[in-house]
Amino acid sequence: MECKSSLILLCLSVIFTEVISTQDNVCSRPQLSDNIQLEGLQRYFRPGAELALSCKQGFTPISGPLRIVCAASGQWTSTKLKCIPKRCPYPDDLTNGEMYYEDVVYQSTINYTCNEGYTLNGERSAVCLANGTWSTPVPECTVVTCGLAPIPLNGLIIYDRRIRGNSTEFGVQGTYKCRPPFVLIGEARAECTVSGNWTKTPKCQVVTCPPPENIDRGYMSVDEEREYDYMETVKYGCHGDYVLEGSSEIVCQQNGNWSDKPSCKAPCSVDIRGARIIYRGRKMWIRDLNPKKVLHNEIISVFCKDKTRKCGYAVPTQCIDGQLRIPDCFEESSAFGHILHSSSLPSEIQQC
Ligand SMILES: *[C@@H]1O[C@H](CO)[C@@H](O)[C@H](O)[C@H]1NC(C)=O
Ligand SMILES: *[C@@H]1O[C@H](CO)[C@@H](O)[C@H](O)[C@H]1NC(C)=O
Ligand SMILES: *[C@@H]1O[C@H](CO)[C@@H](O)[C@H](O)[C@H]1NC(C)=O
Ligand SMILES: *[C@@H]1O[C@H](CO)[C@@H](O)[C@H](O)[C@H]1NC(C)=O
Ligand SMILES: *[C@@H]1O[C@H](CO)[C@@H](O)[C@H](O)[C@H]1NC(C)=O
Image (tube, rainbow, N blue to C red; front, side, top):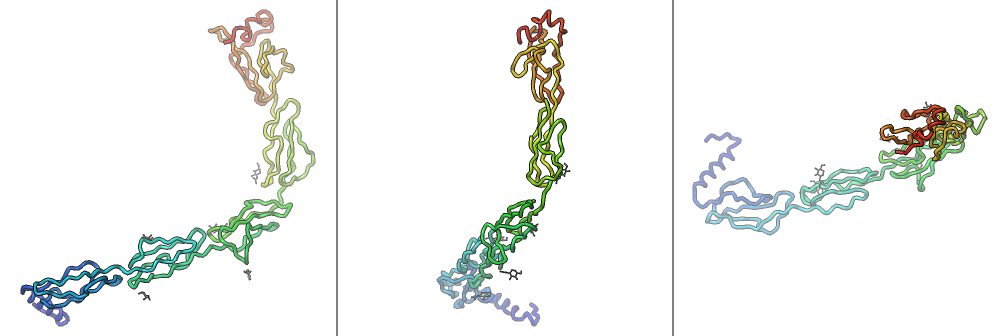
């Protein structure tokens, strides 16, 4: 066996252990549970040799002995030594935050988080060290602050609670108001957000709508040519037989536009002769409809004949802005025929 000078010591010990391993009754390096440490590196021991035991770092010895002896039989004397992990103290509560840990022994970790609206000052986690202390102290959760809410020109804010100094805490809310005649445009409620800034500041503006325009075949409640203020209203009506559709009142909106105007819808003339109709729940001759028209949205029914079953039935139709569609099944009788054979009209025969 060749030995280089730097390795001489190691070589000698290898040779030595080879020598003694050939003898009977030597103890070989014992197999002990994890976390127990044996001194030295020696693999074989003569009877009478002692071996010192200790715990790995981070572990504490319980019971013993801490020393075993190689007996003449080649067996080590017994030991009840156990090495248990060191414990770190339970951490103090984290105000306004949460801690997560499974255990508080050597190498356990604690994770820290702060509640919404709080910032973590310190380390996000700590490890239980070999000497039974935590690697870092418990961090602090400090509340997010925003400063005072920005104030719009011609406006003010009323906080929900009293504010001390120049700063507001996360969650503080307030309501914006504008000095008349300024109108608040945007969101009146505001709050100090998680990001440390206030929600969007509204604006205080003077809102006017242009002079309102009249509607076709109708009239307005005003005739002044002027601009109108926010929330002012104007009413509309329709002339004669025209029917107002939509809201009869418009309002000057925040955006300076009027709400939607209504419109006036035309009546329908009923261009049929010599027949009966149903109008407003009443069966009547067309000549008794005077004038011969119905209003927008009104319904009349005319009578048609089922030629195979030889019976009559009513078909409704609706007036839509001057348009009244007479059902295709309706057959107009001549005025003459009507006088002679009125009893054969679809409205007069048996109904289906
Ligand atoms: C702590 O956080 C780390 C990394 O996010 C994760 O791997 C670990 O499981 C967490 N430990 C506990 C006890 O929550
Ligand atoms: C524990 O060990 C850490 C790191 O080795 C050291 O910084 C700290 O001072 C030790 N604490 C005590 C109480 O010995
Ligand atoms: C408010 O802030 C101003 C400037 O930022 C500072 O000069 C003043 O001392 C602060 N006032 C209070 C009550 O903190
Ligand atoms: C507040 O700050 C956050 C993050 O910096 C940003 O995304 C957001 O737009 C800000 N909000 C306002 C109203 O300025
Ligand atoms: C007002 O109405 C006009 C026409 O309908 C439209 O183009 C405009 O966008 C509206 N203005 C606002 C602020 O909504």
